[in-house]
Image (cartoon, rainbow, N blue to C red; front, side, top):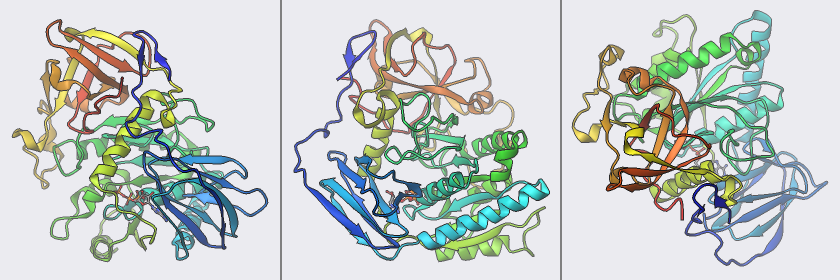
Length: 469
Ligand SMILES: Nc1ncnc2c1ncn2[C@@H]1O[C@H](COP(=O)(O)OP(=O)(O)OP(=O)(O)O)[C@@H](O)[C@H]1O
């Protein structure tokens, strides 16, 4: 275990890690167009190797290198093969089986259709496809986003990927919305891969643009839509300045909650489509949603410069429901690896810093549950006009112990809208609060002084007790 520079602290191991387990190695022969589906607990490790010369295999679109061992913890996923292959598997899975009916053919066709649009954009100097993926929870939206991204990268493109689902982070902490251009392969073991501050990685790092949302549900509070607008501006201007990205277009992953709708009206989906000028809408796993959205965006009803193509895709039979307990463990693992590196190997040594209460400018997101929010789904953006109260300034106290603070690029004196619209430089973790001495102990991925910038404290992600032992 590695000590943390500064205060001789060590990272607390995840409670469940390193438990003894039966190590059983077996080989699994997969026929063409099938996949090995597995679930592995956070307390276990499953190692998978594609045996050399037996064929090719991929994990959500990213090819496995032959004879390399990939290890998974707390993962639910599938290794798919187009032509058949043999895997060597070591460790204990909670569940495992071979899926013979997969959606990979239709997902690959979706990729080919996007490639055609990318080729067309090359000749016309238009934008490439601007894709939004919607559907209820756990229908494989994120998996499809990864597959489309991997295939695009493999085709030599550099797509932007935008994560608008705060329940899980992409190259960032949970609770955030982020965007990044992908020009290299995704990290098989670590989901989307590593960002510069989350540990060394064999896969080149990606520099994400991050905004902090701080709530779990996009239908709650009054931040989601303004942040979508903000993100759309940032992404669009990046595309304007970069021919390769413009041609590749972007892929937006969305939270399941926005696909519930209210009486056939989907305000958050419509907002995302109009702000990002989405022209391809993939609807997974809900016929009703598909039918409602087709009605809304059928050419005769929808009045915009460019029509929105609504495309229905089936949910893969491999998709697994993830309960709150799993999601919480998943987020905690994401946060742990943000500070300590992937897989608890403590490859990163985050810094421990002491700060006075007065050094911290903390703004707490006002959500729907504490009586201040006046958000109604029907409100439009002008209610967020000049001088809106979005946050409340909080004095540090033991209340903030174990929480995550998003350090923005805004100053503490800025208007709330400015703080909201500022990107996040990074996150710090409040390890300890001394109410008497009025001091806090912070964990930061980077050395140096605690910045005076405005910091956002959300009610989401939940506290991570015992990140530091
Ligand atoms: N073909 C498959 N085989 C095995 N597991 C799969 C398969 N496809 C998806 N999964 C797993 O099922 C779970 C749900 O999939 P995914 O995260 O892609 O859904 P989602 O629609 O993005 O969910 P949410 O809206 O809750 O974020 C994930 O753990 C994912 O890894």
